[in-house]
Length: 466
Image (cartoon, rainbow, N blue to C red; front, top):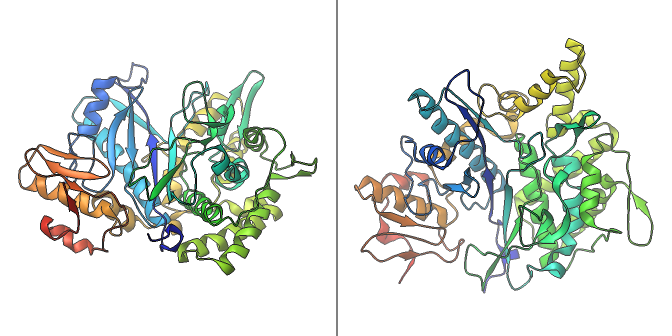
């Protein structure tokens, strides 16, 4: 068996439950669409993009469906590049935005708002999840196996928090991160309703469970900043590598780990300290520094991918800048940029954080499309982190280094042949009356040239039949 740590790239993916609000006329209030409207959104036509009736798999390798609670959800395809997953995630935003605009143009809605914010004013949350493919022989998906990940997740939002203005009983507060505001335990198999864990114990492998486990993280924000999503994926992958190899020296926090994550959320001035086992107090940013130091030593002795080495360099640069002056990170860290933009807006108009106009401006940050402040920053300050060309490719073309390419190419070919009974999930694709093509190993595909999508030949793909 090939060791996961010897593979050049770790497969990652993200899932987003979208905050979708619509109104039938300018006199109506914005409301979340019901199941029937949500179904119309996911079934809206996109030129060159096909969606299976079963499971909602797309010809770009992703998945689009209606999740529990009438939420439209997009899951990115498997990708061995963190930057590829970032592009796949933003492509999913564009797919949903185009669908909403199609329905608006058709008169189904008068106005539609698509928001990437994962918490509303009442602190109700939408789901945003990250998934990491791990070595099942080396990493157990249980409390003992995943506990060493806790210090990283509890403090990572100093770099990856999306920020938000949250109404309080006494007015309003700017917070570093959104999702952590509702955390209430360290571990749980559930990621919604009564239990909001820092570390998810959900052990649903999306590939052969004898070879691969899935680290499923539901406690992070959804970011508009491409850099923040990239660093979130990359640093966590490195920590998982160290856990797989038994290299990581865990940083044990006194008390419950989720409480440190909540402390980070309420500390935009980065002044608070958390207590380690043994009684020593330390800043959350210093915990990140300690993890970085371990990761740099690990990279000298063990395999890490080229992209993970790039992540290490950016991780170090960002923590150095954060120590000197958080404002140096406006071009990368989302909560810093969000706070700076709100401060300038309030100063220009003489407004306070509690003003309804400021609250609306903060909501506008996370809108997808022309109304969104974060969307505009992607075209300006943040553009260097994700070229538009790569997002356009991800809209239609599945990643070339995983089974997503094979699955997406087959879905597209079937539909271009006029088949409407295509069935697929992460591991299989087929049509009624034909043998199912099984892909239990997400890595077990050669690298394809995107040009092969023009005329894929199903019989050429190295897959098992059953």
